[in-house]
Image 1 (cartoon, each protein chain N blue to C red):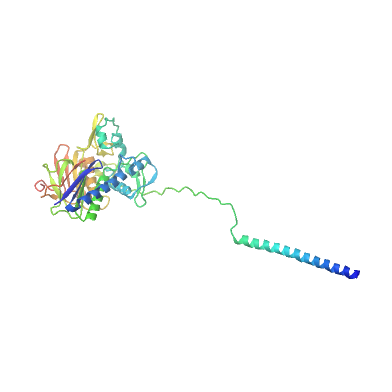
Image 2: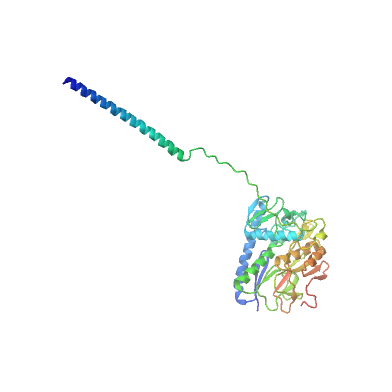
Length: 308
Length: 109
């Protein structure tokens, strides 16, 4: 019998589920600590975060924590693997669109007039990180945003930490980005797939089980806000510096890690059907909801007759 | 008697004279020895000299190598998203049909 706990963190919902009920309290405490660490390092909205300092000191070599360097390296790996379409160099365009504060403040603020700030697919190449020495250089003119990968990295790290510390199988979900570690329940970890991670747990919809790695969903139908004359969502395309306008609106993918799953899902929103070959070449099972609401299943994703 | 006195005085004066010469020679010899030992001592230690702190040339920042560029064309969005992985990656796990009730929802956030 699994046990779970949820709380607000990183501007979304954090959930930990453990296979052994007796360790839930410890698991929740460990998750909180890990999320505080990632927030200290990678928050774009806290002036005292390492990311804010790196952005403020663009052009200079600065010392950073091992965690920040790891998070930035993960983001640069994602950029390298996606031809720069999933990139940490989107802080400027997001801020220009009014997303320069916590999302709760953005949705309740006045709409801003928006001038897209194209970054190009190569903007990430100027970012330097030395994980071993804990040094980072952000080029002038670039503002970091690690939102696409830091949350997934936090899920991976927290799941591994909790499993190692408690000896229990564990699932960590941060806004629907899921990492599992340790021995899973006999039937695996059952996950309902939806457009919005805050949808009811037991509503109708596909349910799949995973036993290792990660699963993530990215969608342009949530985290939306008004700009002057337009509506925005949070998945930006570096080529245009504006919210992605692909033909896919929600993508769920699995990965060896939650970071890998998140990168695949985010690329699907940015590139749309142009990402299908990328997903298939990597053998990534994925569930895609097109803009018109139709669903396509890629790779080894369970077909409707199989999925609950 | 007067003659003996004169001779004694002369001998005394001569003795004084010898003592003065010996004293002068001893002082001179001591000074010379002091000077010689001082020279030896100076040569055996560091010479006092002005210390100049050379300012090292400003160190150039050692470039930190960015990850290898992707092996995809940056000119063609469609080809970039169909390119093979740039590095070996662990395979993505296959989700399975779930017989149990869900424990969590995965969706956009």
